[in-house]
Image (spheres, rainbow, N blue to C red):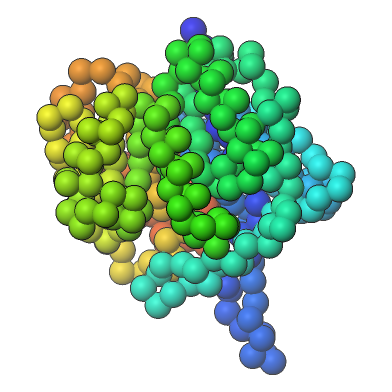
Length: 320
């Protein structure tokens, strides 16, 4: 028996989300705790899983608040480090009319970039079922080395490896460098969650199935590929199966921050419960349907990490 169901490495930051205007017509922002890996873990905690996070925040009041928040939601923080010299990373989120977002990062440097390979705890990887990561922890050399060390440990101890590229172009020197690091992650992962625009960018294929086939030819190690398609729903590619499930569209969507992370958390919960082998068409449909429903609920809330949907809410939506 493993102590943890899922551990993740990466960014924990403050998402300053637009929240109206002042009487002077100045923009108001709400300081929401965020960061894709911790959003995924927060959803997993809501579903009853045991999780832990590896990362770094500043030794400032925002960093302490972030630590308090992820402790509050149940994520193990013993490997969350506090940097005395570099402040907590910030992201300002501009919400577009269709609910999509545009990000401006204050991270030059940010504390999440300062995680080192020596701070990655080897023993933790022997005690988890799944290791999850993205590419914000691969944008700069120091934290990139930490991520690669984590991947080596995860492979060494036989953990299932889950990867969400979560591409943020402004954080890369060039998109060619971003592509190189995404390719590195693909070489290690067993589960890939990738968005519609990311798979088109990565593979050069407009058709998602052609893009998945391109990835599978190059990286036969990937057993399950999930393509999130926003308002169009999601697809799951497993062995010779392709399942597409439509989205649960909401009339009162506020923003889409955290929708992909909520979806990913639900997928990893299902894999924790049923494993990654011998998944049937029924399994894939059940998994994607639940994940789509949960993702739709988060779009009606500001932020993500602290407001992940309860499983009872998801089930109530499915029953409708």
